[in-house]
Length: 504
Image (cartoon, rainbow, N blue to C red; front, side, top):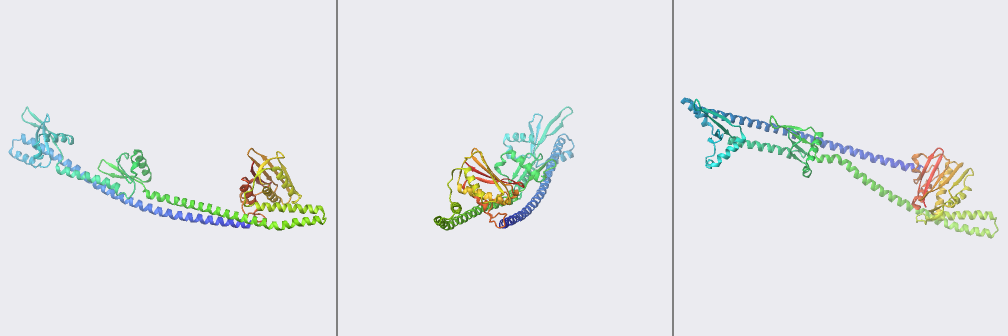
């Protein structure tokens, strides 16, 4: 018992030490992951602040262009008013003033048409291009789509009012600046997804459903529109979206989440310990297998050596029995000596079979068990009663009689010790279709549930001078040599029942 307990304590100590190492390593790795996550979030926040500042610049530029556009329309309205006054005015000073206003419009292209949309006047178009008769017509169609016209109602006489419309488009300078603004907005959006600190981002419109741009996402998965919507929801749960005010009426949103690298780092410790655990399990399995092989070699070596050592005195005892027969020694004495010699031969045979595959044949199980009981009855306490219950007197099972008898002897002797030499042992045989159950029940003190499997381990014993090999040998014979099973079926303060399962 002390040897086994000592081994168990070492196992518990090593298991506790391994658990402590794993917990410490996991704790430290999690600290590193948290630090990296915090640093990444700081970078994202800095990046988001920079985006906000650039968004303000873009917004300011957009507002500036709105003002420029409004100013250009005001200029055209003033120009149109001056044109109308120029025609109707009779004051020379007014005419000079209106001509000066009209002459100052050197940038904004304008087209004046009559009530039938016939072009009657134009200004600030390329002189070379105007030579093409279709040029102005095409320009007029384009201008109509861009800005609403300004009505010109010129009173020619008391009864006649000339109705015309003035169309205009953005000046060349304004158009070029507008292209610069569009490039600025486009580069701003590109910068959002390119300079996102390796963080997956999605840039959406004000509805948060329409994706304008994205970055650091799997291009194959992005082809599925549902993937983007699901990713937006994931990002929304992780981080609050960043609102980007593009102008007074437009608010877009930037969604982002942890980078793939950070996500991998979060799960890396668990993957790491899974690999380590798998390695340890394989190493333990190989070590355990190697240890069992080594134990088997020790078992076989000890058994073979024991059989060899018993052989010489056994031969000598047989010769002495023959010599005593010639000397007319009492027959009862000769008979008892012969029985003990036969018993020693059986033991020698058992030890010699350890390590080799025994030959299993269909034997009468009831007869083998009865012979074992008869042998033990005269060698154990007379206060122990052994009973055998079987459905018939002949029940065949595949076994080796010598080794199986050894199994029963060990179990019965342990039962006698558990009952302290007084009680009842009941052996019950149950015939099943493919198996035979042999239940060995005693009226001893019982075995704690936690020890039901431990008792079969080598070195476990409750005896002060025991080696703890009896039940280990029993398990080896039943499971390794007979391909059966043995286990504690039931145990309490009223006694213990072992069950042996054999193939028929």
